Amino acid sequence: RMIHILNGPNLNLLGKREPEIYGADTLEDVAQRCAVLGRELALETAFYQSNHEGEIVEMIHRARAAAAGIIINPAAYTHTSVAILDALNTFEGPVLEVHISNVHRRESFRHHSYVSLRAEGVIAGCGVQGYDLALRRMAVLLG
Ligand code: DQA
Image 1 (cartoon, rainbow, N blue to C red):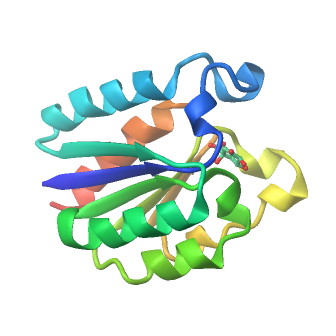
Image 2: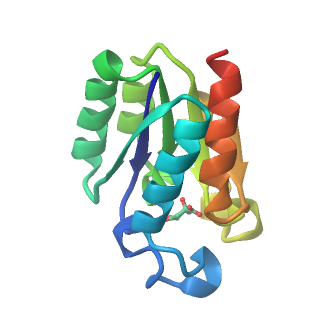
């Protein structure tokens, strides 16, 4: 089955961006690890990133026809985007939310997530390993 893994703004700079918070791995490293683990779990993965809210909305629309599940790190849009929540509410399969950092240990504006209103599960503060954990959980949810 196909899983779409969606990443929001500034995550294209992963590895270079605030490495003390987000670690040294690049988004390309994360994408490759997901592909390898996906094969082990009999899941196909497609990995996307955009800095634009509307493009993320459209990625979710495309996932409606193409994906059995969505793993999403909406980055800063987590805390602001009703549009991304609404788009996820049009998707029928499981949604898992990932944050590399522990958002609950950071500024209070990061404590609220619109996306969590839709997500079956949330993984935060496990570094980029959170993507692996989400894939493993997805395999269980999809049975
Ligand atoms: C993030 C946490 C968000 O608060 C932040 O805006 C990000 C990344 C994370 O993965 O820890 O860009 O989603």
